Length: 281
Image (cartoon, rainbow, N blue to C red; front, top):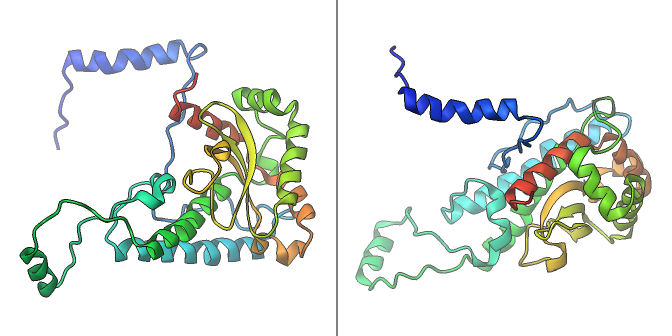
C-alpha cells in the first residue's frame, strides 16, 4: 500500500507550530481536549477492588454494572423511540425542554400516506414531556455517573490535592484546600435525600460548591439556579446505593473515605478542559 506524500509547504505549515510548541513548552500551556460523554459506559480506569478499603468492591460492582448500566439502557431506549441521535450526551443537558423532535424515519406506510396528504408546516415539535423527563432522569444519571467514575482513583495513585492552576483557583476561592474540603463536606451533609454534590466552574470563572437532587446536574441550566450553572470539576454521588452496604446511614463516614480516593490529577485536567471550553486564560 502506498503512502501519500505531504507537500513540503503543507508539511512546514503543520510541523512548525508543533515544533514551536515543543520549544516553548515552558511558556505555552497545552490544554487537554474536552472528553465528551458517549452512549457507552466508559471502562473503569481501576479494578473494582482498587478503591478498598474506602469504597468497597461489592458496592462498586453493583453501582457500575447495575445502577449505571440500567440508567444508560433506559436512556438509549428513550432516544431510540424518538429517533434522536446524539454525539456527546452533555450537549443535551442544557436544553432538555427545547430539544426539537427530529423528522421520523421509521414510519408505517399508512403514516407516510397520511403525512403526504397534509401540507408540510416546516415546524418541528418539542419532545413529549415523558421523553424530556426520561432524558433528565436517565440521561442525567448517565452523565453524572460517568463524571463520578472519572474523579476516582486508588489512594496510592493520586496526589493529596490539586496542583497548578486548579490548586490556585481553589485557594483563591476558598482560602485553602482544607477549607474547601470542609465546605464541600458540609454541603454534601446538608443535602437532604438522594442527589449529588459538585464543585462547579462557572462561565464567570468563579468556583462554587452546589448540590442537586435526584439526577440533575449543573449543566441543566433549565432546572438549576443560574448561580449554580457551569461545568463540573469534582463530583460526589450522594445516593444511598453508593455507600449503604458499607457505611449504612453514616454519610459522613462515606464522604471522609471518598476524599481518600479523589483523583486530584483529573481535577487538574478537568479545570484545564473547562477553561478551554470557556476560552479563559
